Length: 232
Image (tube, rainbow, N blue to C red; front, side):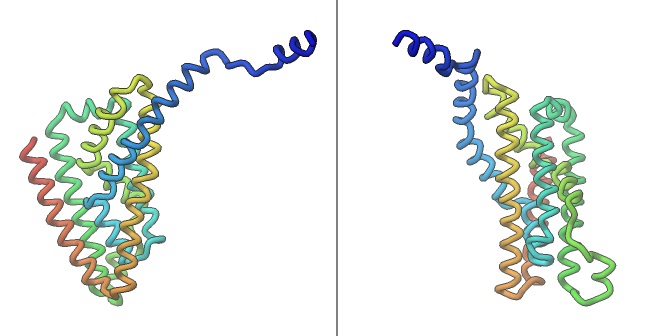
């Protein structure tokens, strides 16, 4: 009996050094998942320039052909979030003129993309379309759209300030936020492409849909641009 107890003690599972701290840290990070997911969904699914272009591309080219743009925009945003968490955002915030320049460039770029898609939808069989836009926006276009999108930087600042900077495990919280934002941003943007594709199929009005979305995009960009310049 003593031998059996001795062998049982020898082979009984023992916690690894520091495992309690690791488990506690994981529990603390898990508490962040729901609020971060809610924040990410509210920021990613709400109407914005990148979302509207995703819908226009979905209506014109279909959801699958629009996926590279969606993926690029998602990677671009997560890259901004990681950069802000790493400290780059502090340097950007020190130069208000740079923020205003980004706002102007971002507005011009998004309006150009919207015009190209809307113009291609007006004359689907013309030679002008072939020269103007024969393929959906690329992943690089999506990434660039986020990099010069002031809203993406503002959301990243907010996420880092609220969920990362206040957490004891800064690196773990930043990685968790990036992972959650990647999944939710990707699904949200692609949902806009799916909605555009479905509207185009069921209503048969690709031209009308994209013209309406282009007008909505122009209004939202002008409003956001004026607000950004006024704040700066």
